[in-house]
Amino acid sequence: MLEIGREALHQLYVVEEQSIRACASKLYCQPSKVRKYLELNQIPIQKKKGGRVRVEERLKAELHMDDTQFKEYLLHLRFFQMLTYAQLAKRFKCSSASAQMVYKRYGIETKQRYNRLLTESRLYELYVLKNKTIIECADILDCSHTLVRYYLLKYKIPSRSAGAKRIEVHIKSRLGMSDLQLRQYLTELAKTYTMDELVHQLAHSKSSIRLMYKRLGIKKNWKKKKTSKE
Image (tube, rainbow, N blue to C red; front, side, top):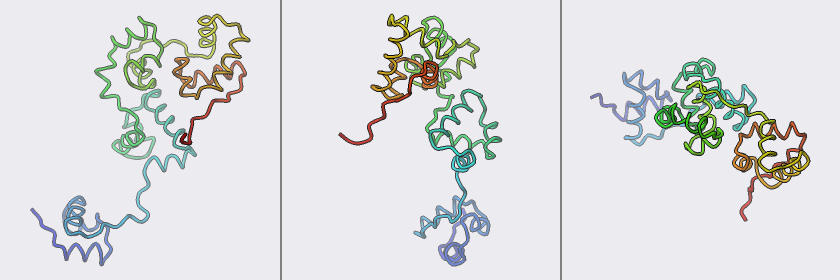
């Protein structure tokens, strides 16, 4: 096993200010080994100057998106357009491993661990036989609604319309309301609950709820989340 002397490492890395990769090239070893011997010899590892920008930071700058918008963009690409990591790598102009790491850093679940849980028979039972909504299926299966939608597409299970009109009719029939009463009810909900709470209250996605409010012309004055400690 090749041993790297402290003096040679100090000369290259500290005196000549070579990068870890450049030191590895001159010492005929891997960069990981150089890093290991820097730590063993207690030579401080210098922070990169002008180092490589993370893929997500570059993409957010190019697309003019904040973190929330970019996460929704990632979800759309992976679970609605159903792109593979190889296809995402081409779009992001990076490697497949880097594309996968972007999703991991944003805490977006990977599909592999759910392949055994979200089987075709289980999803058919919940969504078709028991007539559960996508949100309700997600709660039961302990995953996101975007993942449920992905598996519905994968298994070619026809998804029901999630348009604003269906939600409106459903709420009116369930609560026995007129159009005016429905408007008053939804207005009060928007003042009382945050959007996340409304999702669970109405058992529909954020986009569907927003469409319903837009259709009915109700001002979307959602209650804001509490930020200060009581």
